[in-house]
Length: 302
Image (spheres, rainbow, N blue to C red):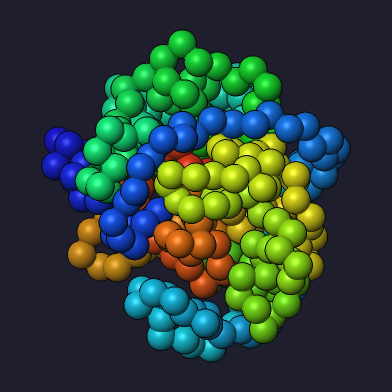
C-alpha cells in the first residue's frame, strides 16, 4: 500500500517541520490544550476577506533552502476565509454529506507525543489509529470545548471535499503566501506575524525552549480557538501559527506531495522557525496530523 510505503518518509518530514535536527534535552512536558475562550463571533468565522490582486516577492527573506530563490509573481484578486476551518464547520459538512475522512477509514493520523527517547527525533511522532477529526486525542476523546478550534487530522483530500461542499477551493501556495505577506504588521520584519516588537504574542506558537519547556506565554500548548490573536492587516486570523494549512500546490517533483504553510503551535524560536509567510513544507495528500488544518478560498463574483 502506498501509504504504508511512504510512512517512514512522512514521519521524517514531520520531524523536520518542528525541528532542525539539533540535540534534544529532556521532553518532560506533555502537550495539552488550554481551552481559553476567545469569543470571536461566528459570523466572522463564516466570513471571507478580499485579497486584492497585485505583485509580490515570493520566497522573500528565506531562512531554509526550500523557501527560495525569491521571485516576483502576480496574483489575481480572490477571497480567503477569515479563519481556519473549525471543528463546528467541519461537523456541519459531515452531518450534511456523511463524509468519512481518510483517518476514519483505518489509516489513523499522526500525533506529537511525549517521548522517552527525546534524542531520537523520529520518536516524537506516533501513528495513532484512533486519532480522527472528531477524536483528536485518540480513541475515546471528543470535541467537547473545541468546537471553535481548527479542525485537524484532515488530509488534503478531506480539505478538498469540504471546500467543494462549501463552494470554494483550497488556495494555492502563491495565493496563501501573498495574503500572509500583505497581512504582516511590519513588511520589513518577517516574524512580525508571530510577535510584536515588545514580545507580545501575535500567534499560537511554541513559547520557551522546544520541546522540553513550553512557557505557555501565548496561553496555549496545543491548538487555540480561531481568532484568539489579533487580525492581520488584511483582516484574517491565525495565518501564522496555530496549525499548518494545506495548499493546492505541489511540493517538489519526486513525490506526490503538496505544500503546507504558516507553521503551527509546535514551531519555536530554537526549532522550526516556520512561523513566517515564506516558510513551507511538503506533505502527502492522503496523510494527516494533529497540527495541520486548512482554510478555503473563493473566486471573486463577477
